[in-house]
Amino acid sequence: MTTTLVIPGPLSEEVATASRNSMECAAVLLARRIEAGRDVRLLARSLHPVPPEAYIEQSPHHLLIASQGYVPALGAAEADHAVPIWFHTHPGEEGAPLPSNHDRQVDREIADLFQLRSGSGLYGTLIASPRGADYVFSGELTPETGETSSIDRLWVVGERWKLMPAFARQATLPEALFDRNVRAFGPAIQTILGDLRIGIVGAGGTGSAVAEQLVRLGVRHLLLIDNDSLSESNVTRVYGSTPGRVGQLKVEVLRDHLLAIASDLDCSIVDGMITTRSVAWALRSCDLIFGCTDDNAGRLVLSRISTYLLTPVIDVGVLLSSDQAGTLIGIDARVTTLTPGAGCLVCRNRVDLGRASAEMKSPDERQRLANEGYAPALGRVEPAVVAFTTAVAAAAVNELLDRLIGYGPPERPTETLLRLHEREISTNRAFPHDAHYCHQAQGKWGAGDEDPFLGQLWVTV
Amino acid sequence: MDNDRVDALRPDRPQAFEIKIDRTNYKVREMVLTGGELRRLPEPDIGPDRDLFEVVPGGSDVKIDTDTKVEMRNGLRFFTAPAQINPGR
Ligand SMILES: [Zn+2]
Ligand SMILES: [Zn+2]
Image (cartoon, rainbow over all chains, first blue to last red; front, side, top):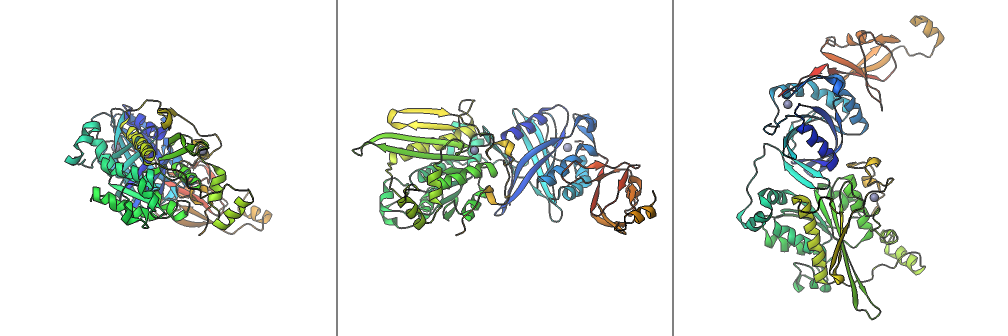
């Protein structure tokens, strides 16, 4: 079992600021807990600092806190269906974020209260020490009955994405085969790539090109989702496809191809569409998702996942336009990054809502509505060319690398537009609309398994 | 006003109230209990090293001091918390 604490950028900044304080300080962090297969994810919701008047004593290595300093946060945890995590700092660049004997005593004193009053049955701990602009941490989760387990990794999702292993976990050095990568971005990023769990929705031209690059970069945990079989005309651009495998599931063809590149790859496949609840549910285990589908209804689900599960989504789209004679005149592609604080695909007008609703109807009903002119005709075969799908796939992987490494501009754009016909690239930033679920004030960041899942209606199949 | 007078005014008044402190249920017959009286319900009494709070659903829990008077009603919940914690290094 691996437990991951997922923290939106602004909350992580609060933790970092507290850890840089020369005085030890404390707070209660609230997080919703979801189970994704064997793994647990804690989605951080809010930080409730101990108010200044509740510190009876405060020094660089010692605290004495009155009950009013932490009790109010427990009622808030109950109201928010959250796990209360007792957070405090061990100041100083040399500070080790490991529980002291005093801390163990505090655990014995408050665990039961935290479990009971929050209604969650759980008591969490988090200790942080500063390291430059970042921090190091250790953490635990203790259920009312059962064993204490550690918080193994912390996944910070904001402008930058940072995957931090728990302090005590020994970092393993990357294998020699990644030497050229390591020369570019160092061993830490290489290790992170190997640890990230990445979902790819769509295993066609762009999805397969993203997958192959990720595996060559050293990504070792992939979840591939597609409901299509490989067709003859896919062989022109789908990586890993060969004429001999036409008719087989795209996800199986791609998985086998990727395993031939890296036999140690952990690759799960799902034959289905993410507009189905069970398939969207499977994506709860991912740290990050590439949206490589041309389906509008699927994009609506991906948008919600990025907010409700704090799972960044890198969504790609390619649009080829032709003149009246049918010759290519425009090659437009975009890479849109959905991360807490950025506008979702709906706020950006990147989803055709008419097509999305038509995609959700049964084929018969869709045809009837299309005949009557009430719905867009779907199922038209769009042009696609390997050079263009590969270019946008590379731009999408580039986006992931920038978010991890941080080589990009400080005011990080959330969308890259490629106008390949003009040999032009431009970027933009878009922000959530006030009343939309992707806005922080709507309280949906890290909502987790709230019913209905992702706050939307699901078609029962 | 003593309890008999209140009973006379409110014949529908329950004979006892079910309240909860931490994980334990208690039946109390009094209309009003002080913090000090509540502290003596558990066996052993709640020690001075713990604070007593009344749960305020949807609000902020209220600290109940020894002389604070609390009107009893069914379903009232209290819990205790260490008065001070000491997370030194
Ligand atoms: Zn939005
Ligand atoms: Zn400590």
